Image 1 (cartoon, rainbow, N blue to C red):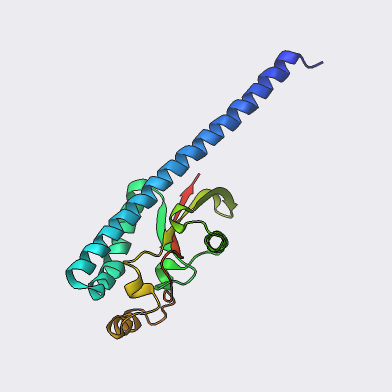
Image 2 (tube, rainbow, N blue to C red):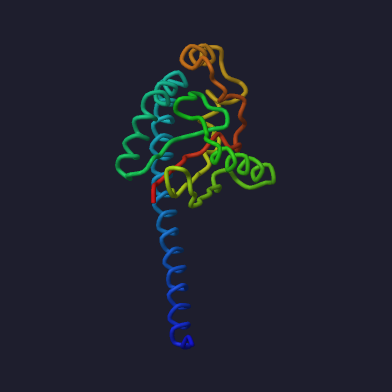
Length: 190
């Protein structure tokens, strides 16, 4: 016969384990949110500075060279894979979304179409993949005013020419302010 004390201790252990798991997920979310906001703030300030200084052609240089460098630095600092991805990547080698990311990005687009603000969208989940368990996180990148010169519908001929030269397979155009341009993605092994 099982004593009520054994059952009570087992129930408390399960409850404590669930509470601990929720705390762990909350910590992972907080860390991911900080890393994604840090990345977006740093990139936005560099792009805006260069746009003000020299226009959109200089901003292309920031996005092509500085953005991957900043992202790699943050990945090393946080000990997790951090990247920027999109359903319409400019550089497929650096920005193509995997199946999990595509599903979340499509959900983000539906939510924006229903009136949610892109800048508020984020999603996280613990997933099991062939390589193990991972914490996955996406934070939407909204199209802002500084972005339309290179990603919008009215791109100048000069910008279009540079983009065609630097990114021959570019799909990252025809966005409007407020749409989801892509997302910061974070993947951490557990």
